[in-house]
Image (cartoon, rainbow, N blue to C red; front, side, top):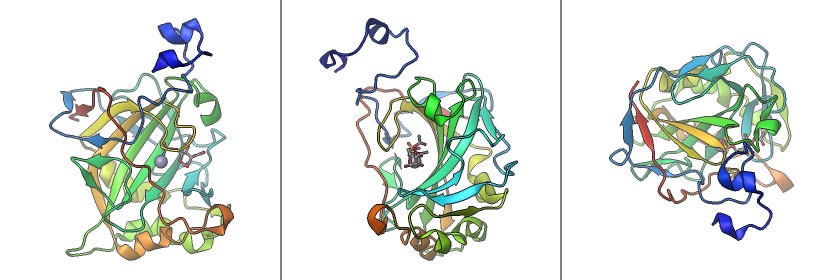
Length: 264
Ligand code: SG7
Ligand code: ZN
């Protein structure tokens, strides 16, 4: 696979460089996470700091592809992640969502073959890099934490906390729109994150350029949401004023990677 490229230099091949091979398509994300196949390990606790009350007033925006909370380019937010499988501290830059046109689809990762209605991603970059842009091509550049949301047919329950996010969406329907959000806007996701067991593995961005420099942390717990809450996401318009009915990537081959199961 690597050998097909002419423009790789020696350092890339022997692994001395921190630059990611931009042409590799071998360790892609998302994947199906099989609990029986995962390698169990114990690690120091994974620590979320500042996500649930963001220091600066965050922006919530329609970025053409998804709804994003936070500022991708600047390091305005003081929220950070460390511990668990991480070497050093990773700074929070933004959270965004993936969904499908029907609630039986929508998540990117699947757990034992099961796909959820939505998946939330908390994107972080290593604190030694200034921002996402700089971290993008580096092997240890990014850590994305994923959580699931699910529409349950039996006993549907409105997730009132999730309305903290959903109530903004009618105003974000046109591409590139944005507005100020509440500093505690991410608190609706706190119960799924803490405390709990999780999977981790090495993979890629799930959108272009699909760079293979993401340490994925995936929480198998999910929170329930209603069909009408997910419908608000399905009204978001992207490029060409076209409704984004779905924005998830399908699962990719594991290609021999180890998936770890961390018991907190
Ligand atoms: C979404 O998913 C955006 C992207 C994000 C991409 O399209 O939120 O954000 C920006 C700033 O372009 O890319 C680097 C990055 O966060 C892929 O992110 S993902 O792999 O977590 N799905
Ligand atoms: Zn994502």
